[in-house]
Image 1 (cartoon, rainbow, N blue to C red):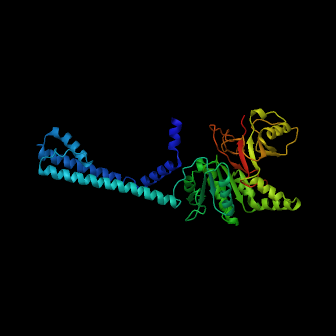
Image 2: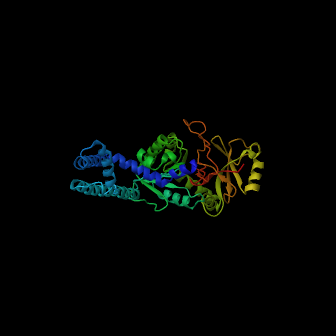
Amino acid sequence: MRRRLRRLLMTPLLRRLVWHARRVRTQVKGRFFGPLLIGLTVVLLLATVVVTVVEKGAKPKAFGPTLYWAITTILGQGDASYATGPAGWVTSWLLALFGVGILAVITGALVGFVVDFLLKEGQGMGAAGYEDHIVICGWNPTARELVEELRSDDYQARIVLVHEAERSPVGDGVYFVRGDPSNAADLERAGIREAKAAIVCPADGSDASDMHSILVLLALEDLAPQVRTIVEVNSPRHADHFRRTGVDEVLVTSRLASHLLARTALYPGLGELVTDIVSGGEGSELYRVGLPAAYHGLPVDEASARLRREHGATLLALARGGRTMVNPGADIRVEVDDEAVVIAESLGALAPLAAGRQSGKPGSPPGDEHPEVPQPARVEERLPAGDEAAHPQALHRIALPG
């Protein structure tokens, strides 16, 4: 029951409404409900005193029943026979009119809140309210292709775009936050603390865009160091500067493209093959899988054969302690916490794990590398194999059933 209640309370729409309510309350600061409550109290007391003195002979015992009559009259449920004289009748009418006025004011406030909510949401001035989502910081052609890739994938990841523009450049299906990705308040509205990954895209190919991306990464690491960060870099000369920010993955697109072009020139068809592997949809794809205890201690060749036999997956590399061993030798055995990079045609029997960092970073508390989540959780993620090995959307992190 508690889990269902928490799931209901944590729905994105409800969280957005709560965020807007807090914003409105901060802006109003008691300038609406405070005066309204004071006015209502004054009117009730005056009406009670008038009716008690004029019609009830100023008896102290009559004050309570008269106050109750005044309150119910404002609510439209008063006893019409309680007031027996002209003063009581006039007071009753005024109370009824005052009640209608209060209802109109409250209704107008609620309508205004809804209209403001819709306007702010349409302008990108709201809050995402998501959890375990992907935050894209910045917009460029790569980001556009990235969104399409994530939309076409099996897991249908929730996406939030933080970009300084009057309108969302994406359209439906992506929550738009209008703002500067290097601004802490705008990142908070994107729900960066509850995100599972953040991807930083430069606005253009200039050095200034790279410098702005560094500012974005510094803000991300300050607000949510547990969130995995991936950045697209324009110039290879800036890659070391980006790594100093603590970013998890650095992708130099120009270097990736040049390497792939060179390999394609030497080995015809390689470019098409790599594109098919790192793209969603039909065909085989790259996945990063967490190996269960049944695989621990097995030689690589035996583990590879078992993966192929049981899951139709081909082993390419083993990831251990933040290092990836491509085409591991036959003398290597699978160890605890090892993860495998495989090629598979579909998820099949592979159960997805929650998003997490590939390896801990300086200053990260122990245990951040492989967070546990309740099962069954249907969450997947794309992981880059490195800044020269794969497209940033190339890999999934999943786990085999033990």
